[in-house]
Length: 253
Image 1 (cartoon, rainbow, N blue to C red):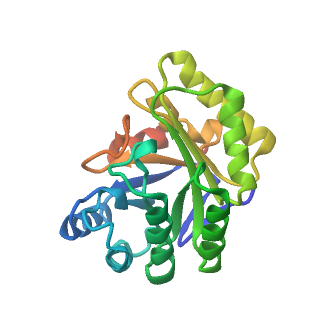
Image 2 (cartoon, rainbow, N blue to C red):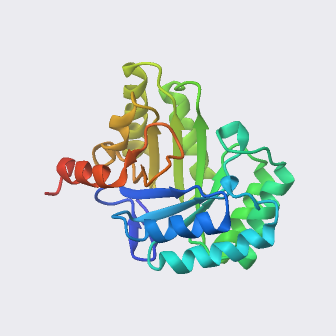
């Protein structure tokens, strides 16, 4: 297993690391959220730039990423544009998706970049090469807000992310039953024990899937998403509660 170290945080060992989203619409909102987050007991921050009102001004995004990173200090920053088709806030052309990311890589400040699995392969590979040249790690992801795919399909998607040179492989699915939650956990365990050579992140969303956000140390998920004020996905647990639960469930007490 290749561990991923970003600043003082190591992903892929021990308890899942807690990551909290920044979902402010204005510059002042984003920076205020970053200041609040810096006082929370979390490990990383995710700036969801699809919530940001000036995301179409790519240079403004890059400049604001520097200010956010400065506020966060030693907390690593993940920058994410979540597309509409995968649960994001706004429509954005594929051309703009890659353009804003390229601008942030070249002119901004970040530690990790979220890239969606089903984007154009050649453009993704070019983007990953650009990011890696700057020391930026790639979190490749896939989201299914309607259902939970079969176990083999979940494993295949995670395996595909490895083949595409992601540093961290992430999938989030929506359960319709307890059996769906077990499917996600079984797929996570199979990926971890048989195929994964780098950290993976998995979650079953909503109230039904909440257990998956707490059992990463057992099944193999390296990060879990907590909420500060506004959640960015269904089922996120408040940070303080999440930390207490992770400590209680830890295998290394």
